[in-house]
Amino acid sequence: MKEKIHQLAEKYYLQVVALRREIHAHPELSKHETRTAALVATELQKLNIPIQTHIAGTGVVGLLRGRNPEKRCIALRADMDALPIHEQNNTPYKSQNEGVMHACGHDVHTANLLGAAMILSELRDEWEGTIKFIFQPSEELIPSGAKAMIEAEVLENPKVEAIYGLHVHTELEAGQIGFCPGRFMASTDEIYLTVIGKGGHAAQPANFISPLIISAEILLALQPLTDMNVPTVLSFGKITANGATNVIPDQAQLAGTLRCFDETIRAKQHERMKAICTEIAIKHGGRCEVNILEGYPVLINDVAMTNAAKASAIEYLGKEHIHDLPIRMGAEDFAFYTQRVPACFYRIGVADIARGITSPIHTPTFDVDEKALLTSIGLMSWLAIKQPVKI
Image (cartoon, rainbow, N blue to C red; front, side, top):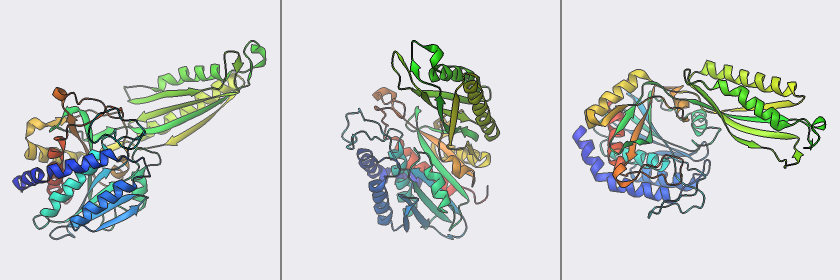
């Protein structure tokens, strides 16, 4: 079976690359993935895989039954949305949608899952159970597409016993794979502060309460909440105050992010933030409105499943291609799936240092070495077949 999958990965590789380029050239923002979803639906129908469309908006699910389809159900997930970034690459498949770019590799994720569907479809008489292909919208935008898909019962009918997902990784070269059992990626919350003071002429400090001074003190007071020993990070990247050199505004807005690896600590940090902001604002005669938009939870890979997946990956690719990865402060809405069923979220290398393909994700020059797809479509197919019925 392993050799057959390797051969089929070679067979479908160029077709998958073409799909990746088609998706990359026509990126769509979160909740607007209509063209991508239509492409996915068409490709699955070509494989005679029954589909459901318009799940949680633009989501698509395909259900492939092998021998003894009731024996188990394994899910494979890809996200489809792009980012509001102007692409600066000069490639034949450069984004044709101004200001929108697949800068996080979701084009790779979607093409990869279609490639796995091609391989598993051709082998459907040689493996047992059911494979559910989940093509998810809106990973990049809170509220989460994963949460919406789960609420639409994508893990039911038939009930999913385990789920795999992957993400491109620019710190590994194409052909390399990384795993991390247990806690892998942080929770993420968006923090919005509105600091309200009293505006006035900048030359008359007795007559104003500066929201900028209050904001500065709040930022300094919140800094100790970042503690890499925990680990937890609180960072602010935006301050807006519509004053002038001689005009003190009435209010200032701050926006930031909180990342944690423990849900209890996450909740405590919320309360500490609110208390600190309120206390400092009142001390200066102002007030602070704290709005916390709760995002993704901590992504926790099932330890037994991930260790088994790593062993299977070594069997498929060889030990020299498999790596242990550290925890990451980045966030990923696949975390919602990990709360419901045993899950394994792993990384596929996409860099090519010799060719200069090393730009990080979420940058306008991000690109991938497409040879990564030759590895990834085969490996995901192998993992789906090798997954034990019970974790």
